[in-house]
Length: 311
Image (cartoon, rainbow, N blue to C red):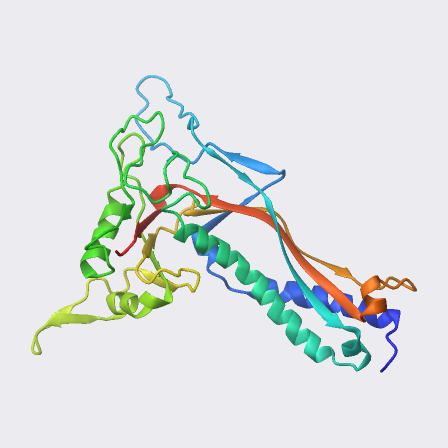
């Protein structure tokens, strides 16, 4: 068993830090498409500004400033970690290639955590698992009304029960529902869906609906699929329902999910420092590296999304 010098340990620490951050940054996840990143500077952040912004109007007298909503919510940052153990024998035996592969895979798994939290928050939007929408309702609900609004008609971005399974008819109905959303003054709200997100169980149904050019018709006069290319399909393993599907408008500044970022990813280590051994390196010949992320997830404007439970 070879001797592990301080220089070798420092070299490993530097390599883990660099390799991890490079691989983490290279991961092309789905969360940026469905979540707006909001930087946080304290323990928790208040969101009382998420109702629809006002439309321009003719100024015939004086300005009519739009106040913040009376209701809102608070997102409190939480700590998240992932840790990796490395045997000192790996360093002594010059097996850095094995460490590099494991660190890269660790970085990807850590980056996938952001996808997991964003998609799971979306999928749980018909309950209070990750909190409520700014209007006090579930994010996906049938009776949204903006507080203190001029427009007091219930609006729905949620379908369930018989007849809600993913199909040509229900998909068109969902698109139409989003296009008919109103702001708190009754003005049409520009929420044009561009993405359909489903779990693995509905992937092929979704692709047949949106990526098949011809449907129905006859042999001599085949029908045309008007949904072809209408929406981008995202398939996420973090949607575990075999029936639920989601329409999203991801083109705006405010997306369906809020990713409140406070800190991270940061990489720390529990390794020998100079001549000083750690307990683990002395007794077990083990080195430890940790990834730390601090943040929270919540809901943006309900008009940017539509959910069908599919059953």
